[in-house]
Image 1 (spheres, one colour):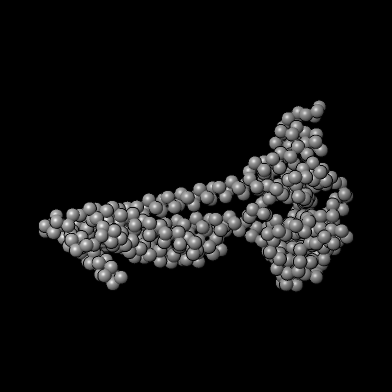
Image 2: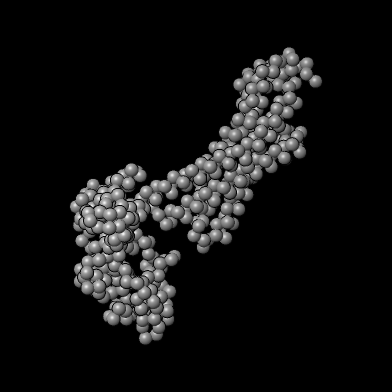
Amino acid sequence: MFDLFREIAQTLRHNKLRTALTGFAVAWGIFMLIILLGMSRGVFNSFSSFASAEQSRTLSIWGGWTGKAHHGYKEGRRIILENDDKPRIRHDNPHYVENVFATKEIDSAQVSTNRDYISNPVYGHYPEEIKRAKLNMLYGRFLNQRDLDETRKVIVIQRQNAKTLFGDETKAVGSRVQALGLSWLVIGVYDHDWESGSYVPFTTAMMLSGNDGKVSQLMVSLKNVENMDDGTEAEAGVRKSLSASHDFASDDTGAVHIWNRFNSYLSNMTALNILDIAVWIIGIFTLLSGIVGISNIMFVSVRERTHEIGIRRAIGAKPRSILIQIVTESVAITTIFGYIGIVLGTMVTALIAKITADADFLKDPTVNISIAIKVTVVLIIAGALAGLFPALKATKVKPVEALRDE
């Protein structure tokens, strides 16, 4: 092992400028690969923070306007979703539909206290909304099934709104607010990156609208969906059920607007995987210039040590031992400069992560242990390939000719 390090040191000393320039190319290639992988990981983490496979198994549905004449109805007819659509969708699509929820939205409702007031939407929701919307409960609790069963006048408000209404968000839970002509008990305060509306039980919101049966949105939670074909089939089944309920053409995509969150998730994941592959390709090609330089250095090293190789061959050294030595030297040189690039790249990604800590588009763009292992494997393979051809040339040196070499 000591002899190997001595050989590597000798190679570096004899080709200082060339080794430095080539080493810089290797370090720069690995540095750029780490940076690109960190950025790719940051984008992936940002997407993952907003969506997951399980949470994305959902269809969000809004009413629209028909674009085709159907059964005597002219095009341009308004389709309003109804609470009675829920059992119909479940009944018609038992394989794909796990559950159906509805939302009743009351626009621009004024919520007030003796101190101040706010004008924000009030949503009638089910308890499952806390998971779907990823609401972070700071104080109190979210809606539960008992709130719905008893049609309670309880409300969950956003953090900043609680501060406006009560002066101190911690004092909101247990207090009362006035909204929609009624007194409401505040049972929770939540935080969210962009949502600021207030939440009340769905049954209570329906009661306030006179139980007309009309809803603002339907949310269908899916099951047994594994790929995009399953998601498309589930969406088509739900659309067909609604077309039968509201008497519009089943291929009229404008009658109801369906956001297939599951298919969108799969499409985004495919795009992110393509991005990851593209980053690796760009990084490896950037690294390639440095690898070629390492190979050239090893060719020079073999040429300078032809006499030494001839002596070793003459005293019985096998070609395999010479090949291993040259390849090992190449791997060692590549690894030394490569790890300089890894360290610098890791430091820069850590700095970027600190700068973008509050950014939504880039979450924790740092490299983890799995990426470090992958880059290490790339380094070892690249170093081996860089030294392979010079090593093969060294094994073909004939002892007699090598001993004559000056």
